[in-house]
Image 1 (spheres, helix red, strand yellow):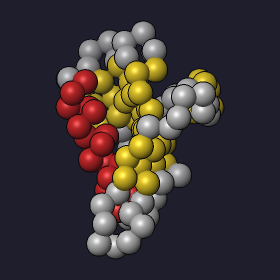
Image 2: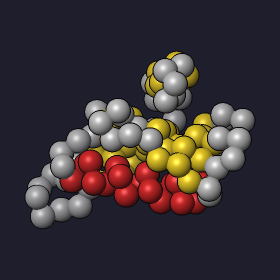
Image 3: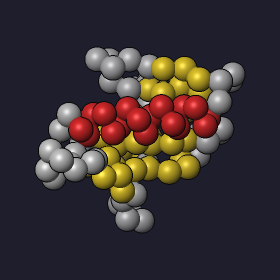
Image 4: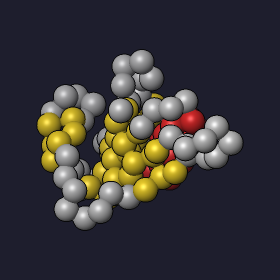
Length: 100
């Protein structure tokens, strides 16, 4: 499973992904969110389950989604929000653990 995190920087936003994918930087949160959703859909289309974590300024969790691979090659990936109370320990791009 891939984990992709959108997190604020002092100036702009970072989309932190695995080393194979690399980080991306954006001036607006909207652009970062659009990019991370597209990335998750590409990974899911390739058969990879992807978790998206979106953080606000100050580090507060804004949203978390799972992008599921399509059930059939002719279908599109499905993005869902996990039910409330489902918690998972994730790591930020710098490796610090945080409970989402």
